[in-house]
Image (cartoon, rainbow, N blue to C red):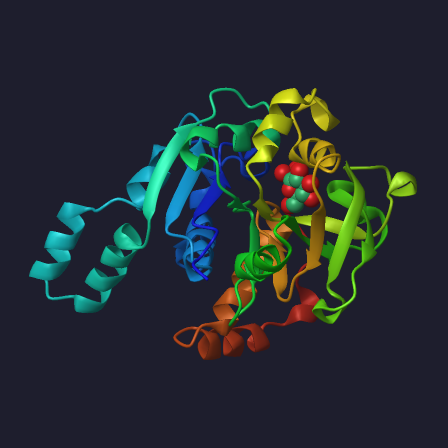
Length: 301
Ligand code: G1P
């Protein structure tokens, strides 16, 4: 069977205020985890999942992202002249890894609205959504691919989910869902969902994580919903409405997710990704072991 999901949408128009002043000029999606901008991890995941079209929903001041995935003639020329084949390959790969289009979200009206901006570029076919702040490390089987596999069997929208214990659940969209037999106990059929509920009101501990495979009917739903949590057009509310027409599944993906949109999450991702690197891991580990951790980390500044 040919690949049914070819396009991946990346909502990347947010202001990144949690990282000021670093993000005053630079898009937060361009902050590097080790040596790669956050968004590149997502784009590589989409490609490894079989997508060949990347649609980035950008906002004001986000042109750096377009440049990043474009050919830098000067850089490539200079690396070739200086006989740096390794670096040249790295620079070339970024520009040639996928067909990238961008569309602007002119007003910050929420995640649902950002996805709606991709309607024309997506057209009438199912598509993936990757929230670039959510880094998912799942070697061997990329998170989006795991959802695509479910989609190809169920022919319905699929949302990545993971268990979040305690009050932290209030920072997420939360599913009301029942397990479906098979799929190693990872698949749930969703009956309802709510965006950022109070802890007491959360219907379960199954949090929505930033990977989705959606049917194109979602656009119609986004066009109908009213502003929800935070006064924004929420994707969760549009999905809730979609439930009245189609089944939606939640899939407890295999892999480790980092919230790189949060300072602590970003630091954890940096440490773990660096430790996994062949070229850096051993030396970095030695360094970490040499730290006198009992006398550090109390916070002075
Ligand atoms: C968004 C979604 C939310 C989801 C979260 C995952 O929220 O609206 O449902 O749980 O991403 O990262 P945000 O974190 O953008 O406020």
